Length: 501
Image (tube, rainbow, N blue to C red):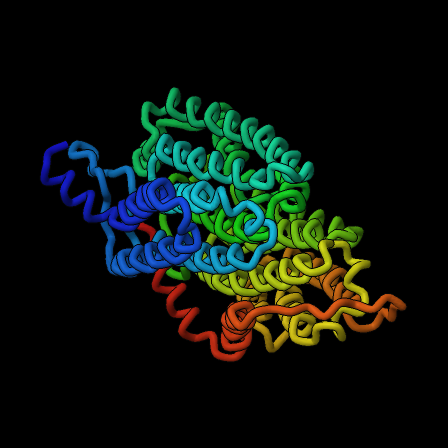
């Protein structure tokens, strides 16, 4: 690689360089100014805002970084698709930092704030590379960077047994998933002699690869990706880890990590296995693996298991964990349409899911700070004790359920439109039934908040102006995108084209 290619490549990965510099700044600041840890969240947010400037520039890019002069393919794609998911990650990270400032769990560990924010930036860096990577080796390394940081953050509360248990389970499940994925990658390399997704596509176009071994390897890679996005049957870690991790980290894993995983899944499928795109926007895949049937089965299994398991949960974090699994099923169903319209639905849904899911976790965190519990029975009568938090939680849960005029309705609407346009009527009907099931456990929370009377006097929950501001910033998009969603849809439509496709 000559110096000219290196220079142009570095210009294409400005967001990743910015996050790397921010990570080093956080470490140095924590070492030098040990008594000024309150400034760490501010430094981190400023660094993320600077990074977002570089990410926004990538919406107009369409180039490879670290390009191979012989093949013309690179390790990293700088395109609008990756930029969209990077913006999702940055927004989620900023909100999680604001959550952490108010989280009793994180505040009690103030002496380790430097490690906390450093690890969070490690996760961001991993998610950035996952969203852009076009080489299986870089994809694996990026997943490991994300995973190692998230393992530690899941067990950040060292003195809490359930946090240590969550971290251990996460490491064990994650290690197995990573091993399976790496084995699949090694088989693909052994069969084709390359790990670049574009080069793999060229070989498949020329019918130089295929057969049972190739299919087996492809499914193993899918298993590794499925672990990150919590789809069944790779979801077993999710409820325990979500319950044991600090609430801000639980919220972070449910949104940002899932977004990066879906970006990877879409890029892996569309680049490696697509033959062409029809005039109507449907992907014509190579007839090696019937990805559509596999994805439909996994999506139905995921949403059904997630929704029905959530019905029996008495812990709100576990309920939201299974809810997150169910939402992964809806998103996977949109991917299974294998069309540009389905891809638009995924991007729109993620942008909306960011606000409504983070909002639900934030309200749960504020209540847990006061009552020291996430059990649903302890929420009885809480709606009258704190009307603002009760109304806010109701709005976020109704949006997660997909009721109008909230933005959650628009997210689900675009998924159903994509399914019906693809004549997947039966699948759409199954998804609709699952949505109806989800209403029950969301409404169950509202019932405890407002309709169940209790003899216990609920404590008045006090919260700062900053907490109110964060909730308002999350509620506004939930309502605005519920009635005026055209700009979001247009942004999604402009972001669906992957480099070269």
